[in-house]
Length: 188
Image: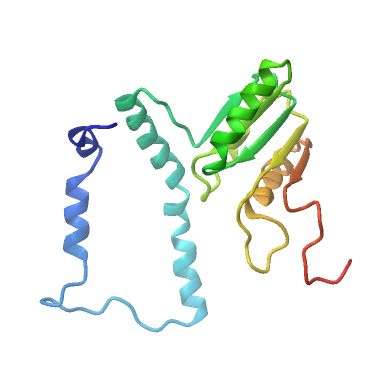
């Protein structure tokens, strides 16, 4: 367990106080937002992209600090299993622990499996993801426990496929929900 003093050393109190000073205060009211038409709204959304894309580097920096404090290193994507695995699973959340135990048991019996644990999903850092995967992999199974309403397929599966396609790499990628056609849609 991390000591509270150690956790406090990771917290930027000056940035917190500056944030609090900018907060809405009933003693000093001011106007913060107004009605916007779509053209102005989307300009603001696009302007936020540069900040959004910096999130993985910031999170990775703090993961390193936590790892230095605890002795347990973390990355945006942690790989466990055979370093020469030909089949891997990509997953996130609590299911990773059971998958890791299964992989360790299978590999002890001579198999070559691996697991990529997704620690930060969105924004999805494709370069970090691809670095976590052994070059020997030919089949990837993505276990995604979410659905995006109105979208075909799972978001993690889609991001994994996109990462490989953008780099011209073509392993076999299987999504847990892609084996069957989506319900309530006519056949194509």
